[in-house]
Image 1 (cartoon, one colour):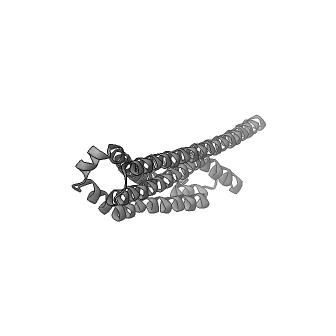
Image 2 (cartoon, one colour):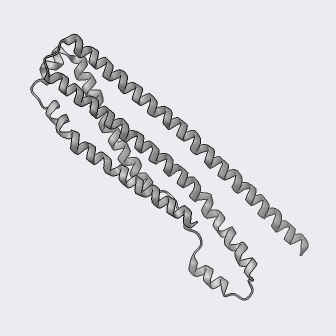
Image 3 (cartoon, rainbow, N blue to C red):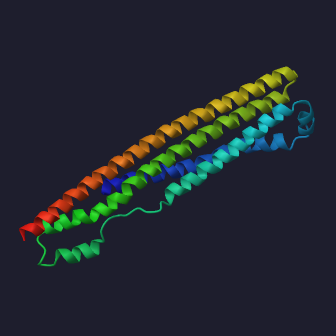
Length: 223
């Protein structure tokens, strides 16, 4: 149980780090976004190179949505729906002083009390790890899109031909789509792995409950 608490703290620390990264990315790239979209060349670009402006708009939306999603998922990791820390130590101490309970009985009762904790804590931990992986992927996607946006800004500041701008816009869109597909593939694999671990823990828990039920029935028959 102590080890599980430490691993939860580790995931919380990484989630806090993930929440802070979007602020760093915004502080680095916000000037580029504002200077581009508030510049006087946007109306002219919209008439001469609408596809380039459309690509820049998609990248901007992708960066904003990815960063907001990373922050929201990081906050959900820090505020899980349930995380049981086990039995109440005060109540356990009072029961331990009861002369009607022997040491083996106390050990067995303590283990049974921890079953409900592990039932909820392990799936919560696995899901938090999965959420952390999602947030990390979103941060990588946002950083990639922001870098592409900077490339488009540099492109518009130079005297380049319209055909070259269209070609670079298509390359940027294709690369953005490839990054998104890779992220979705990693997300799907992580989800399958997480569900497999949760299912395995549930099967182990059911086997343990069956063993306890058979042990209780054997004790009742012996009495």
